[in-house]
Length: 302
Image 1 (spheres, rainbow, N blue to C red):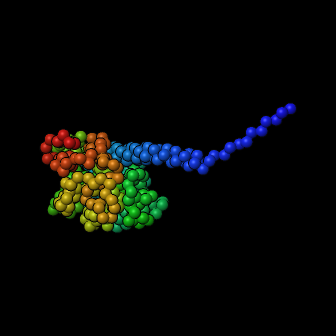
Image 2 (image 1 turned 30 degrees about the vertical axis):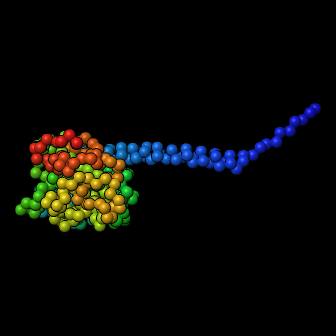
Image 3 (image 1 turned 90 degrees about the vertical axis):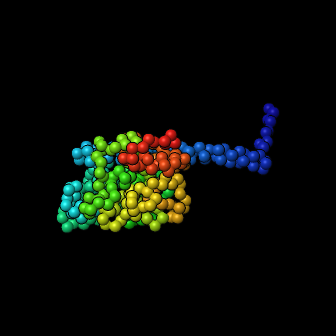
């Protein structure tokens, strides 16, 4: 019987290099697609968080005679239902409406003379170190594990900020009410669909940022509040959002919205809808949509 032998031929060096080059090209083509998919998923999660905040605002209003949650509050007379000197902001008031009722109760049942809200004890430590998923945008480059990168382990942050022009008002004579909204959800002059309620806002921004449990405004913590358009404290209250400010510690402005998404900042309208605000939006248009009672028509670049 005749046996034929076959000699196996190995790849040459040139052939290996060609194969490696082809694989590298394919990976190079694939990575941008993967990054786009990840960014789309992050954008969707960010949008869903804002929608949850929108539902929470409406549920808060339904439970409080159509009132909007206050931008910040340092209770001096208990009119909002919190014990004196609790020191709260808009996000703490929304806790019961984003399935965080246990945290809310822990912060508001300490009794008169107890610790401020942010220092109240919870089952996992004090309030200020509790990360809240709904307050975290996965694209926020200044947040790590729920903390702003300049507050890791000290204060949990927020990737979103409320519109002070909606939820607060310029200082009035009564110190305990200067941060409450002057409108209800039902009587916003320009309409809920034409008024911005919340936007993205970096958790860490320069030497300050957004802390979800920071005390109310009369505690002197304006620079750390989860708010934007702080009039009249900020002279740049009407400036448009910042798009991917980099580096965050020098190019970010804590009084303005800021986003890590490419060319679009997510904004919650007071009717509960979420839309992307293009980087091409003019300052005039932005000033119109964040003011709840200017009565002006929204330009076409919105």
